[in-house]
Structures are given as C-alpha cells and as structure tokens.
Length: 199
Image 1 (cartoon, one colour):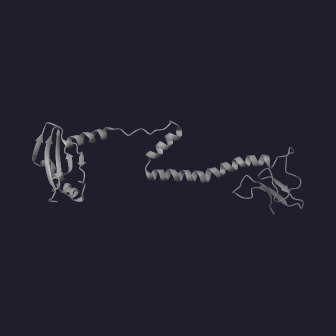
Image 2 (tube, rainbow, N blue to C red):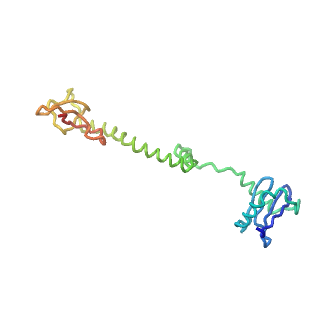
Image 3 (cartoon, one colour):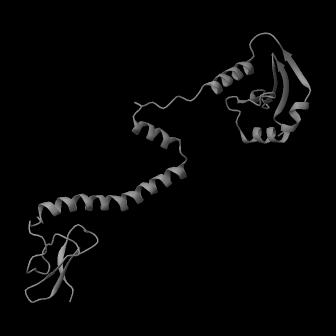
C-alpha cells in the first residue's frame, strides 16, 4: 500500500481526498462531505482499493495539503456531473397506457423471485382452470350438437351400454333388463356421457 499517496485538498466548496499512484497519476477521489467518489481511468485496482479501505477512517483528520478557490477543478467538474446524473429521474416506462403495457411495466419492477412466483401461479391457473373451461364450453356444444334431447321426457325405453346419453345420473335399462346409468366415462372429458351398466 506504500505506492498509494493520499492528499487532502480544499477546492471551492469541496473537501476532497485524492489517491495518487506511485507514478503521480490520480487514481481515485472522494468528497468528504457528500461521500461522492470518483475513479480516474486505470485507477480502479486492488492495491488502491486496499489502501482506501485501510486509510478510510483517517481522511477527515488528514492535514489539508492544498486549497484552490479559483478556476475549474477536475474533481469539481466530475462532482458536478455525478450530482447532475444522480438528480435525473428514471424515465417513465413507454407504452400506450393499455392494461397490457401497465402489466408489463409492473412485472418489470418485480424482483426475480417475485417474477418466478407469478409465473408459477399462471401455470397453476392454466393447468387447473383452462381444462375446466374447455370442458364446460365443449360440453355445451357437444351436448346440443351430438346429443339432442328428445321432446318426450325420461330415458329411452331400451338403452345400450356405451351409447351416448343426455342427462348425467339418469337411469335406464338395456334389452336384457340390466340397469344402466348415464355417467362420464372419464374425468378427462367430463362433458361426454354414456350409458354404463351398474351390474
């Protein structure tokens, strides 16, 4: 750390500490009042960081080696630019104001774990709700297109096991007198109903 030299300087309204490399080039500077720090080109090196860390607590008590009150100072100019950059507010997300753009903007503001949780929730909804909605919609269409209900109430006098039926839970009989019930053959397609023997 001996090759790093620290110098405290008053420049206009700033109380600055500079770090210089052994060849005299500035490596780093800080404003003691605001805590603002600057790296000069090529100055961000491990040795400089170690020296800054070791001497950090001594900066406020270091003797002032120089004071300048006239003319632009490089560190002051850097400080002004950094202050101006810090004051610039983040641009508002561009979009047409539609709910979709607002949703995308809101998702961008979430952390990665929160985004993963939202994605998992969407997958769960898609897996559980979408098949139910499809079954409900297709069940209504299928029931009216493929299984028209007769005007006469009640089940047919003679039903056939495996044939389509219109009303879940309805009871009928086949030609041999076995009792048949109108049920769904599987949970995957709950809108399909067939006659199934109970015996």
